[in-house]
Image 1: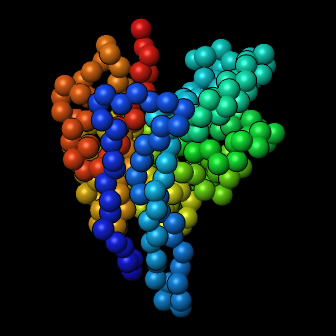
Image 2: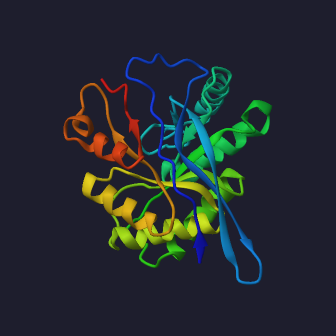
Length: 250
């Protein structure tokens, strides 16, 4: 059984806003959950989760297959990590498949000797390959492995990497809700979901009293489909933040 208060949707910057190092946006309601009493009733405490408007993607970190990562790449990535934090960027996006987990390990290493990195926002992803059929255990086990690589007890955002799962959206949604209830992630999102898929996930999570935080899609000046198709507008109607990847593609 869960108790919840009314979810407050995201606030968006005006179109003419000029982001600076101090600019923050609201990803979604951050959720902390703890069991109360012998009946294990869950108390949901909502408070704002702030992240920078620019998110540093870490697909290349540790990836020898696509990005030709070498030992010489490591200090350069560490420098990029440190500079990003010094410029006010506090959010890093990774995934279990980036470098077969090495990207997550890089973030853990880079944090160790940087006191300013103590409060960074970490987003990672679950890759629902076809052999992952048993839920919620497949997702929960993968998330625990990501947490071990990241050396944290909880991530800020856990996302489904894409709609490539053989089980239904609702089965994946129930698993994400379980991850929140276990305290393994503060918010949950999706990536590469269509409007219909995003809506189904949103509706599923609402039944658990949980807000779908985000949908990460490819969005740039030369790929404006999320905008022109109305997808961004549909996300915003539901308070779902749109995270654009490859925004500087040329």
